[in-house]
Amino acid sequence: MDGACSGVVAARIEALTFRMEMNDGTVGYWSGTRRWTLTRLCQDGHPILRQCGEIIDRFDLREVWPKRKNASQSVVDMNSIRWLLLIVLVLIGSVYGGPLDDEYAAQRRRMVRTIDADVKATSARLGEPGLEARVLAAMGSVPRHEFVPSGLRHLAYANRPLPIGYGQTISQPYIVAVMTALLDVDNQDIVLEVGTGSGYQAAVLAELVQRVYSIEIIPELAQLTQKQLRRLGYDNIETRVGDGYYGWEEHAPFDAIIVTAAASHIPPPLLRQLKPTGRMVIPVGGPFLTQQLMLVHKTAEGRVKMRQVLPVAFVPLKGKH
Image 1 (spheres, rainbow, N blue to C red):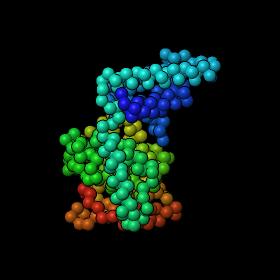
Image 2: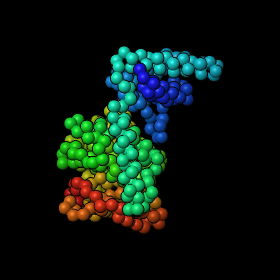
Image 3: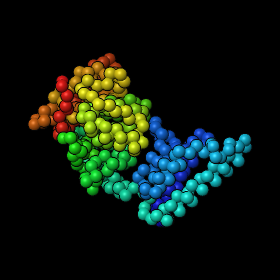
Image 4: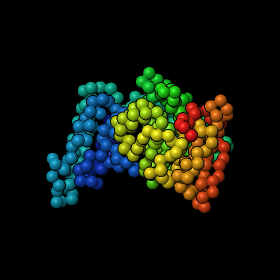
């Protein structure tokens, strides 16, 4: 097993055992605002490692590792567990071969570099000199290949949109990054997404915010995406089937709203469900006309300000509106 793989495994064990020490044996740890289990940490690794993670995730180590009265003894015990797990995972890698790191990791890094360069090249139009590091980190951590059809995985990290079936597309990574950045969210925000699609945009946002509520109008696509998001461990994303034009009143108001299909106008229900000081990013325009990506800002007094950001091309927003 090479040094790079060993480093990856060691880093994952460190993350795991940190949570164990801090929470008396619970397997997993918190990143931002949601729980990352060992399964989630290893979902981009070797299948055997993934299976190992799923097994360990079912354990509560408090049942097999008694709590010590002596705090220093407890630390020694946790160190023992750390090394034991590291040895097990190293042996797995040695026996079964193959890199433990994501085979798509290099492609993802290249994609992030391309996005960063493109954003800087269009900074005058965007009104920003570049993307924040946390947005780039979110783009670099979400496995885009899991959100495209299997036959298109070789194109997953190309900076272009791809078809996902049902007449829908997964947006170009550059556009996903720009729309995410324009929302200017933080880890306490609640976000509404109109147009779940493959779930990729929601997954990127889930890395940055407390919760994402996402609406998809195509039932078959919504069902597939919901299963995929659950499989990948995105437990801070809630989806439902519905007409996104009318928003999601039960969970309003929202700190930010993102619309991933082009509307002929900005839906009034979405404006009402946007918090004061909140932001909305939405493409506006007809399918055969020039569409503009619009940034909508609601002031603290409730006034609405808008500006055009970029010419774009999105599938039309469906519904009976």
